[in-house]
Length: 233
Image (cartoon, rainbow, N blue to C red; front, side, top):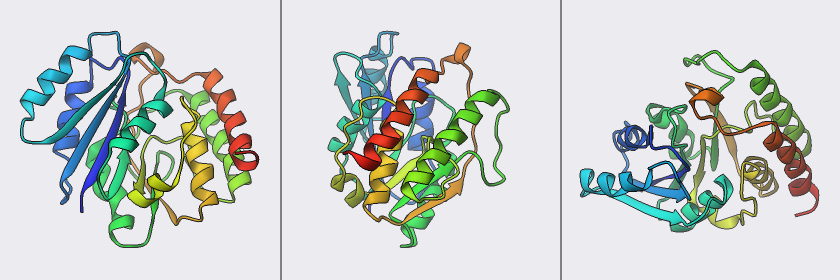
């Protein structure tokens, strides 16, 4: 059994080396395939990829590129298409989410209880950085709306950490190009009747001065996606 970790990357030169090192040293008893998808970075990220391939020679590390920025959903679509593992895990390229949580995320799937696992920032006793109150409120409102239409009882629909058995990813066509990937994937997982678990994770959130990219506009698009993928797709 193999774990595929898919990382969409856009202008993360500051954190890319560190997150790759953390992923490849994650405390899991599975071989790791790391798929990096550069989504049109313009900040000096590109030369780092060759360095990473040399540094981690012998590891299963691949780099895919979009010539222009298309968005997180588009990058994940590319990465999912290239992933060959039995389990597929979404990891952001910043340092908000810690690969040390992988054992907790993988356990329900490895135990045969789950097809999909979400890592929640709002449950459990893991450490969380304290900031961006209104961002948290927005996340909870979006999760509540999503739950009302999918009949799931998630606490954190917008989380980065989503883990899937490969069969789930292969069964779903992702149409969203940007951050509306999260509600689309959630709606389609619910419609597919897949077994969903949620576990608490740690979270070291960053603010906009530190490079956070999601905005209130993405929140409005997420609302539209929640409705669209429940009723019309």
